Image (cartoon, rainbow, N blue to C red):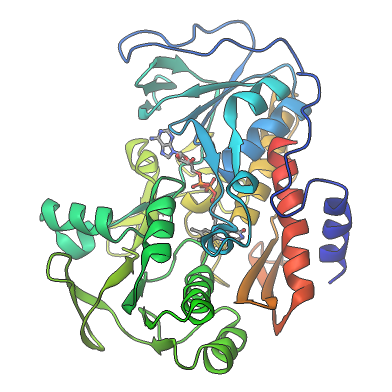
Length: 449
Ligand SMILES: Cc1cc2nc3c(=O)[nH]c(=O)nc-3n(C[C@H](O)[C@H](O)[C@H](O)COP(=O)(O)OP(=O)(O)OC[C@H]3O[C@@H](n4cnc5c(N)ncnc54)[C@H](O)[C@@H]3O)c2cc1C
């Protein structure tokens, strides 16, 4: 547990605090760069003499890469392309649903942070990548790169449920959003919870690999706590694609049984067969039910951008694997050493554990690792292999506030295979909630401080 203690000690000096105002901004690293407005058919940024790194996606991975690159390789030009005007954190958003943290703790201004660190942020939709020409096209124009970092996060694969039925897919996404990507969906979900009058609240869990596997169970606990603490006659049914709760299974199961016996029913092996968002019915391999509200998590895949960049690999059956086909140690595409992929979009990396946990912590580590790789290459040196780690805290009780946690470490064995060590902490307690807030402070500082 030593590394965790070190991390927390470092974080203690950084940001944390419930709903505290963000730390005052230090002086910008260079003069603020002008906000970009353009059109798809024009050149967004002409190429100067400096070599350019273009980062697509300003989430946990992309932001960490941008800041680290400016620090390690100030001679490189860094451009961050992101569709959203502000950052919203998915980590901690379950706690935010029950008002345990403020909105201001989760939202950050892209322009302010890019000015501070001297990289350029352009708010745009990335439309495609021409890898042969080393060019990215966006709604604001196109731009050339020397190195490209793809950090697009995930997309929901509603097609797996609805095929070509766009009407049902759209109705499901708008009425019963998953709130698993940084977007307005989180606000829709919070409004639904706070307006819920009672009845059946259903949650489907996607098949692995998925974004943050323990977080749906945390969300179920937060929703159940909301019902219980407000005397709402609501009941949560968790329809899990898997055959059991994991990671931190004993900790979550204890919470379901000891805290939410009357509020939560957990159903394993409940694969979705059909959903009718209009009559509010769901059919699964474990049975059918009617619901009053639902959080429908369609299967996850690498974000659209990874597909547009031709970064998605093939599985053993020759079909798209759904995830980026990266070199497990260097994190660049197997087919293109100048294109890196980081965060949740990363595909298979090891026969020991298959995929890295799709977490903000790992995305942050990937961002830092890849920035260091690029800085080394730009200096004419061979990068040394570096591996991430992971740490996740999951709140299970709203009063008293208590959490459980899981930690992962990675090492390279003599055969060159990445091995995973997992440590579950199933003993729910208040101390872990405090640690979680310090962790968040450290992470926000790593991206925005
Ligand atoms: C409810 C919940 C709780 C979680 N809790 C934790 C936790 O406690 N700890 C933890 O470590 N992780 C947690 N996670 C997981 C964490 O949010 C993700 O793993 C992390 O965000 C992944 O980082 P990323 O950079 O890969 O993707 P993201 O953070 O999703 O960033 C991707 C960015 O790319 C942008 N983008 C995508 N496509 C385009 C395009 N075409 N053009 C322009 N921009 C584009 C998106 O707008 C987005 O900002 C949680 C997630 C959820 C949903």
